[in-house]
Length: 212
Length: 212
Image (cartoon, each protein chain N blue to C red):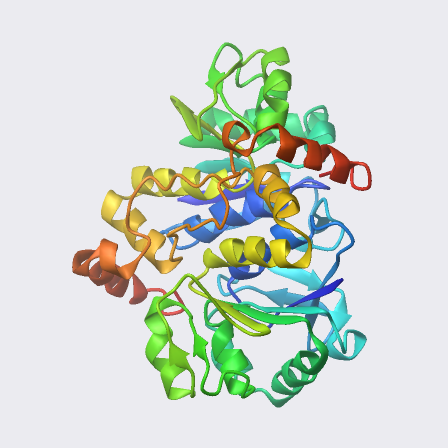
């Protein structure tokens, strides 16, 4: 099983590394990062750079495609080379997946027209404008396409995917390996439970760091 | 607030990127990855390489130290340059923290002698042999030292740390930004709930990939 995680400048690192950490442990899987060209690609923070070993032409037909999100998805979703690769890879993939605003890139490639899909809570309206039906679920599957919610949701999505690619026992073994027994210290991970006061704090913080 | 995430060859990527994704969003924080020398450092899978911008001598006294785990911790925990840096950084740090088997590196540096601490469930006995008191909690704080359990626990640890460095409202805003509303598809994230059958599957999988 060849798994390709696509990176682009200003991606959100956890969007990519969450699924990576699950899927690299799948028996028989061959995982690679891929980008428009080989070489360093920096995440949205500017302080994390991944050395990408493969260009689009090196990985034309992966079995699994994972597209992360991040502020750079705004460029990626209108970049011809990126959209061409996503469309081409999807023709033969077993599953084409996204995390966070990675779904906007899938939508930009025309893959989500008329389909249920999800994304980061802050970009649900954009997903609708691009022709998908936004759904407020953590993971949304429509045939061969799986989209997931903001940033950390990629871990949940990848465990679901791991079970589909192997079996539930193997996926559970991976969950135990990465001790994914989440115990968030606060209950503010969803818009509904965080409430308006926390959204206001995000708006304050965004003055200095609009990419967040 | 200067935050240094220490990398070493064969680290586990999510151990480092979980805390990174939380802490890089902290207002006023200046986060950097650091290693014995500048340049590429590859994770335990061999397929993820981070370009590290700072060597130990570039970051002598960070406010926050984060040490991830991974199979490479076995080397790091006996590497003089690494242990010297950890000891020196801890002298002036506000908090010195670890994820997964990163606590073995802290123990190797002598920081955990007689203290409660945690690590990946598979290495609790090693932690005890190194002079700490292993405790089966997700996050364990002892004064300025915070250790956390396997791989994914770094996200929980970092949110706790973010609240201590700023305030709970800011930490909750970060939790909402990364939509950390975990919904694991299975309940196998802890040794107690996964059970023996899943542990047997891990042992089977480890035949081909002993580093997992």
